[in-house]
Every structure is written in structure tokens, then in C-alpha cells.
Image (cartoon, rainbow, N blue to C red; front, side, top):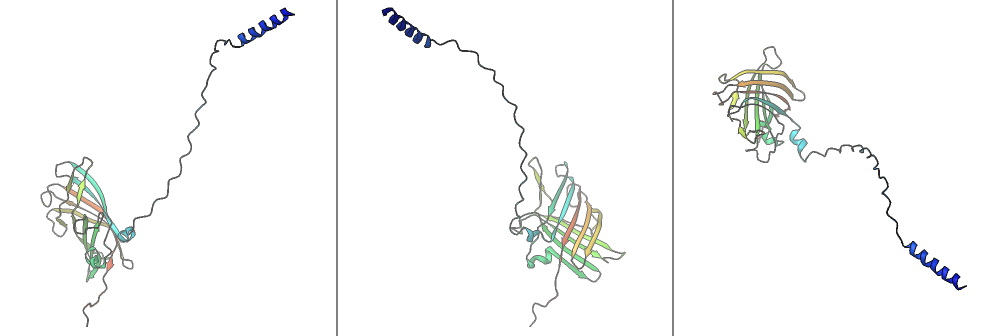
Length: 233
């Protein structure tokens, strides 16, 4: 009986001993990453924001687009396009900025359009376009143009710039201005909508120290002054 108890105790001790013996770690299992999923579809483009306050009022009368093709003062050829589309909405300034005037067989258009901000009317860049049409709508129709730029600088990619002269290029005086042409001219009398294309060449030494070709398009609505006597008793 004693031997049975001894055997039982020995067996229990051996069981405890073998239970606490750790075997060698097995090899890590094979890990395979899955294939990346496809990218999601791009979202839709957001809605454009509203124009700034006053934008429609300043552009509602249309503008003048130009292309300058010539040589810079440093002798490097260049082509530059721009748009002058802002005009004053003040009736006080209409006479010189956005008016049509009929005088016998001549029709005079007085346009001034700004390139950008009109916070300072005396320093903001602008274009003056004054066109006289003789015998408008007749076979003898002819044109005379006075074109000038004020406070207008042209900047280039290499952080350099120059100012376009403030001289007036006048086709009535042939010295220095040549190849003047008006095409696609139209004027709708009921709506005062004026459209045309123009081009001219400015010779070096006449106005500028470099050759310059100017072309562009005019798409504007002009105003006509109502006759009145402001000083009537």
C-alpha cells in the first residue's frame, strides 16, 4: 500500500515537471498582404462663388480687349494680351468714359475702360478709345481713331516690366501710325451696342523707341445724353 502512494506521488511530480517544460517555438506562419483596393472616384467640382459686390455694375457696359505685338525697350520681342473691362457707373463721368454723340454726318464714341480696381481714378491703369465715324452706314463710311493708355505697365515672367507711353496714337496724323484698319463694325441704334475690331502699327522713333502693333476688339454699350437746359429759370 505504501508503494502505491509513493508511485502516485512520483507520477504527480513528473506530471508537474513535464507540464512546465516549454518546447521549441515553431516557424512563423506565411503572411501574405492582400491587394490594395482601387482609389475612390473624385468628388464633383464645387459651385463657383458669387462675384464680388459691385462687379456686375462695373462691367455691364462691356470692355476693350487688346493685343500688343512688338519689341520691348530692351530689344526683346514680346506679345501681350489684356482686357480693360471696368467703367465708372457715375453719370458725372459718362461724358468722357462711355458716351455716343451724333453731330451732323459724324458719330463720336468716347470710351474709357479700366484694367482693374478703380479706387483711384487718377492712377488706375486705363485705356482711352475715341472713335469718330463719318457717314455711318453709308458707302462712304470712314473712321478716325485716337487711342492711348494711361498708367499702364506690362509685367513679364522674369520679374521685369515697362510702362507703355502715355502718348496718343492718332490716325488723323499719319506720322508714326500706319496700317490702321477697322473691321466688323456694327452699331445698333436702339440698344447703343457697339462692336468692332481694330488694328494699327506704331513706328519706332515716332512715339516710342520700339516698334509696336496694336490690335483688339471693342464690345460695349454706350450712353447718349438727353438734351436739357440745366439752368432754365
